[in-house]
Amino acid sequence: MWKRWRIRIMLFLAVLGPGFITANVDNDSGGILTYSQAGAQYGHALLWTMIPITLALIVVQEMCARMGVVTGKGLSDLIREEFGLRITVIVMLLLVVVNYTNVVTEFIGITGSLHLFHLSKFISVPACALLVWFLVVRGDYKRVEKIFLVASVVYIAYIFAGVLSQPSWHDALVATVRLPHRSVWSNRAYIYMAIGVVGTTIAPWMQFYLQSSIVEKGIRVRDYAASRLDVIVGSFFTDIVAWFIIVACAATLYVHGMGAIQVAADAAEAMRPLAGDYAFLLFAFGLFNASLFAASILPLSTAYTVCEGLGLESGVDKSFREAPFFYWLYTLLIGGGAITVLFLPDAQLINVAILSQVLNGVLLPVVIILMLVLINRRDIMGEHVNSRLFNVIAWATSIIVIGLNVALIFAHP
Image 1 (cartoon, rainbow, N blue to C red):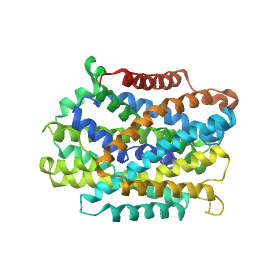
Image 2 (image 1 turned 30 degrees about the vertical axis):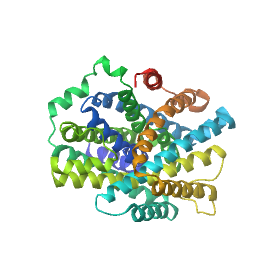
Image 3 (image 1 turned 90 degrees about the vertical axis):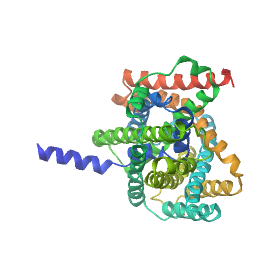
Image 4 (image 1 turned 90 degrees about the horizontal axis):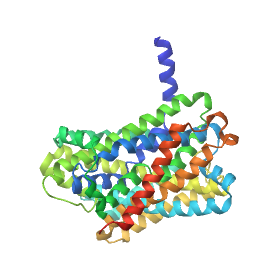
């Protein structure tokens, strides 16, 4: 019995990485800001989203991982082959625009977290931009993945910060399983925030990055059970962290009437007199880790997507000479994101950060629908096509997000 379990554990550890990393990068600077804002402005009123979002995240991520294992191709590759170059270029352009705003948001998180320790953004941003560039350009896949896995574990700091904020556990748990009053759906700001929460938790870039990582790691169908567990564990962990961020800010900022925050670092600063220095340090350190982590992954995801869509060489195991377009695009995204933050007025940072997450929510249904068409093709997936349950959950996710976007248009200001 023990021998069988030991083999299973070793197999899981061998394939651990793509699912766990991808899900946790989702709690990036924009995600932390969105969750913090949700807790600070609405208390527990958005906690109900966590359960359906977790279920949807597991299904969508599993679909991507399964397509990568079965086909051995990235999502952009499949979209180009099955839908043609025109649709591929449109999707890529949209993704590049959305991901650029996300990269900017990561550098906003970096400057905000280090500003708490009195470090100027004109020092912190260039230094961190060079660090993440060097990490990927000079590393190989196994080394980079190990660093990303360590960074993923650091997110546990937010769970400790949530506990130290001494929330009302009963109220938080009840709000998690109870739908809000119908009146909230006429509130444009609430709907905008709800779309941001969905968009930051199930971001479009994640699907492209996860499938590319599965392919680059060389995971085969016979190993897929362990890879699926990797996806499930990562999805649960990232949303538990998100839940604690909302609860921590609800217990401190919302309860004390502090309302909206300007950047995610404000949540850490405001927490200090309310929950103590330890909560402040954990929140600030978690924000820096998340921002630096995502500033590496997001440009990488975009470079994978574009190169696959155009049929160009890509991958961190390739040299700069072997995949020049891949590395130049990665470099431009990091450099552009860093320069934007350096010259963008501080008053505009919050608007860009929240907008990036809402844009994720707007693009998400398009990506899921393309995935659904692909994964239900027997000539592509064979016996590994979607089950009826997975189709229902994925289609429901798309329809609900589309409904939220429509509601946002017609809701009262």
